[in-house]
Length: 184
Image 1 (tube, helix red, strand yellow):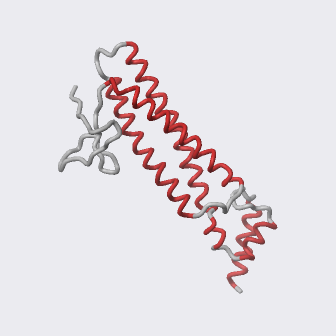
Image 2 (cartoon, rainbow, N blue to C red; image 1 turned 135 degrees about the vertical axis):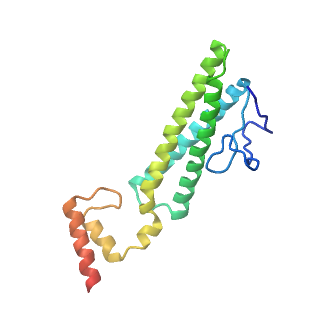
Image 3 (spheres, rainbow, N blue to C red; image 1 turned 90 degrees about the vertical axis):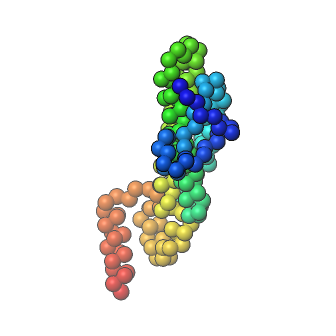
């Protein structure tokens, strides 16, 4: 097995011209590390789990109370967590490489399995943050400001707070109202 050293365990470099080894969406090259780094990587992923869980906890109130966040905050949240999803591909590639190594001791194999489990947990939390971010896109301050006062009032009267599902009948009523207002 060839291990490509890097400056630090979290360093990703740009691939050399013509290189296709481990290239992902952002044109980063996969760096490979010895099995002795599995503990460091596992701790890094566990820290990511804590931070991502906290981010999810902080976003939940915005779903319950729409129009509290701006477009830039929601876009930045999505961008950061999409980047994290891309990084998880690299971390999983490393886990796959370690798993395929012949001669792993039972302790090393168990450490790789713990690492893979942590990656799975971070992937799940990250996907939740991305889903919440997508749900928040139409519920930003700018989305509210783009609506007319009359439209906001009608939505309030129909019992729609911006993110709740509106019955098909109410959606039809709102669409008819919009058409009627725009024809005037």
